Image 1 (cartoon, rainbow, N blue to C red):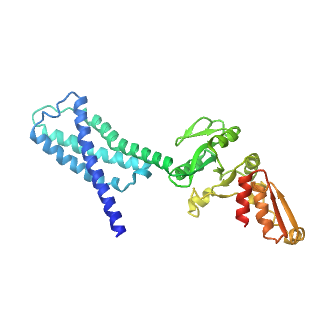
Image 2 (image 1 turned 90 degrees about the horizontal axis):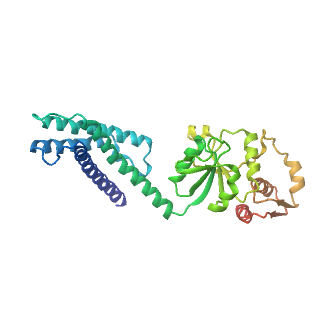
Image 3 (image 1 turned 30 degrees about the horizontal axis):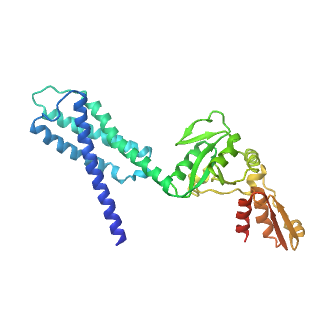
Length: 327
C-alpha cells in the first residue's frame, strides 16, 4: 500500500510540474511579446490555438528527454543540459507556431533568441531556486555535525557535494595549502589557510577534519597530520581515487586514519614476540590517547592482552571516543 501511495504521490508531483512548465512557457512567450512591443492579447484565434498545441508538445518533449525523472534536490550539470535541450525544442515549436499563425503580417525573427533566454530562465531558474531552498531547509532543520575539509582539489569538491546532500556532516570550510585557492569559494564553502584552523574550529564548534588529499605522498600526509595532531579534533580521510573510480568506495565514505598514514614511509610489520613481551600482562599507559597516533596505539595494545590500559589526554572528547571504542 505504501509503495502505491509513494508512486501516486510522485506521479502527482510530475503532473503538477508539467502543468507549471506549460504555464511558464506560455508566460515566457507573452513576456517576449512585451519586450518586443507587440500585443500578445490582440492576436487572432488561430494564434492562440497554435500556441496551446505548441506548448503541449513542448511539455511532451520535456517528458521525452527525461526532465521529470530528475529529482530537484539532486539536479546538477547534467540536469542543466536536459533543461537546455528541452527549452531549445520548445523555442522552435512555439516560434514555429507563431510563424504559421501569421499568414499576412510580417514575422519578427528576433523573438526566437528572446523567448529562448526567458524560457530558460523560467524553466531552469525555478528549479535552481527550488533546489537552493530545499538544501537550505535541510541544512537548517536537520542536525548535522560541522566538519572542515582539508584539500580543495577535485576530491574535496566531490566530497563537499556528497556531504551537502547527505544527512550526517555539514561542511563549513575548506582548508588548503595552495595560496592560489585561498579566499575562493567552492559550492558555497570558502577556502582558508591552515593557519586559520584553530579559529575555524572554535567558530563552528568543529569536531572532525576530513582529509580530501588521496593523491598526496606518504611524507606529505605525515606532515599535514603532524600539523593537525595538537588540534582538539578527530582527523579522518576519504578513500583513494582509484577505489572511488573502481566502485570499491564512495567519495563520502570517510574512515579513520590508518597507522600507515602517519608513517610517511613503507610499513614495517611488527614483531609480535617483542611487542607481547612488553605488553602482555603488563600495565600500559598511553599519553595523547585521544589523538590519531595515540588512539591507534590503544587499538594495537588492547589486542595484546595487557593487565591494564591507562588512557591519558587533555582532549576529553577524543579520550571519550577511544574509550568507548575500546570498551
